[in-house]
Image (cartoon, rainbow, N blue to C red; front, side, top):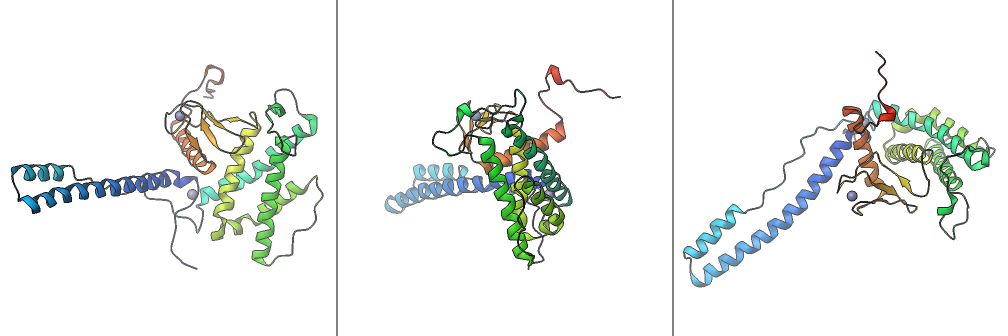
Length: 284
Ligand SMILES: [Zn+2]
Ligand SMILES: [Zn+2]
């Protein structure tokens, strides 16, 4: 195994990852522009070679030199190193997320069992035709359980532990989460834990949304659209998030990155559009 440090894949480096992506995009644009520039210059040189240099070609070449594309500035943000994979804060964040996932899933399960109160937001009318389950909540909880069980199975195999015991349906999810919490420090020190850690944080956000709003089309007002800056993002049934303002489409990964950035901004600046009903409590 390499002893080289790599950046923590957690929230602490969301700004860094965005800067790297922007830099890569700018580099591609620069390379394209540079290719066109070299071509244009070569055409003038070809004319010069054929007919001889004159004021006209010299002026064009001088003009082209001024238009020479500039490479993008390198990324200056210094990323937080993992210890060895995740930083301490993100390890703690993933642990909290796993605990909260257990609570939120239990809440959702109680709605789906028919014990939910009014205004829980489950609307089966928007249900996708042709899919087997009448309840998006049950689908979501099944998907969560399968994901958790897969991680437990893989970790047991990786560590040479006995296979997963059979667990009764009612407590299976909670006991799987409890088992993972017991192993979490070791899991998060493993270089293969990046996908699991990110998925755990994504599940936390997804269940937070599901306990708050319509599970079929989830509104996501906390994150402004990256193109038009309006707070009009909606996550569709197919998992893609779309801006109701300009139509910009984001996949789950891209949305997660933006959500991380928005959370960091909130933490730094405090809530931006606080409304009358939730005026900040002045406890001093
Ligand atoms: Zn971190
Ligand atoms: Zn938009």
